[in-house]
Image (cartoon, rainbow, N blue to C red):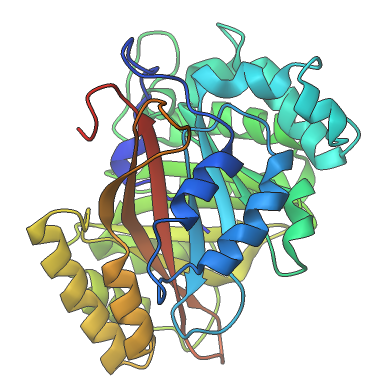
Amino acid sequence: MRRFTSRTNTRRAPPPAAWQRPLPAIHRILAGLRRSVAPRSLVSAEWLQALEQSARAIPDGFDGFGFEARLDGRGDLDFGAVMARHGCQSVSRTDNNKIVEDGLLDSPSWKLVRSFCTRWALPGSAEFEAVPHVFLEFDTSEGLHQLAAPSIFLGIAPAAQFSAGDGRYFSQPAVGGLVILPKLIAGLLAAEVEGSGRETLEECIRALPVGSIILHAGVMLSRSRAIRLHVAVPAQVASSYLRAIGFGATGLDVENLLTRYGAADPLATLQLELGDCVGDAVGLEFSPGSALDRRGADAWMRLMSQFVDDGLCSPERSLALQAWPVVSEVSLDPGGWPCTIRRDISHVKVACRPLQPLRAKAYISVVPQFSLFGPR
């Protein structure tokens, strides 16, 4: 799943302003969210209550979170949390009582996450220079107890893609990407990206056309450590790019899908899974923008109507998704600072696999903020 952040969020996230209190643990925000959701919400209060208990094991330092939901109404929800660099020290500290008490020091996946956060906090490191935010994804298909095995995805700053680090800049991200991405992925895996896996990654970067950008790169730590690459390429050459990197799935009319669901978007956002070769499936992401304003809400209504007509979404799910965006104020502590929760739709993804029906998922976000001045 993509990381509940739009393409514009590859820019560096600022630290909290002086009048904002640092965010508390995720499970407390979940408790406030649970009290505010409607009975027929896309995310039920009962599911949030179960997640709230499991999320107690997640360290502090995250700026927001979100959910992945299939639009046909089947399957479980997945959960993810996003962190900017100012929160990384909370995760990397070995004296963090929560990490020690919940056994995260001994979890292989959390060891890799904590090791990354230690490097991320060091000025001059590749992680410090190239990564504005990270996203942890928790696959709940085996139950909410699986929160101990996150996958990690790195937002890649544009400056790290278009610069050789010596004052030279380029019109495409291949030069900087070839330098930085293998290094970052190797750090996540605690091993060099070698052989055909590295060749596949480098081939996908080299083939990026002018006007492209690398959005995220990561490792599915809970799924055989497969490498994921998320890129945005000019829509008119998306099919050519997929052919150039050896995407050989037959029967997938990518151009038609991009035109049908994202005709107004000049960039096509692609999710690729990489191993010895490019996987035989691709994820196409679509987002008309924030659904919290009238123009965005109207665009989402038109897109979801098309999804319903095409059998990708049930009418009930469409209504529930469109009802999700809202800005509300909740109380987490009696007499405490007001907490504003911004709920929005990040994007939808159409998963394309050869000889299989298309499957659509929605990614919805929750961004909390404490402020003496209330909603902003």
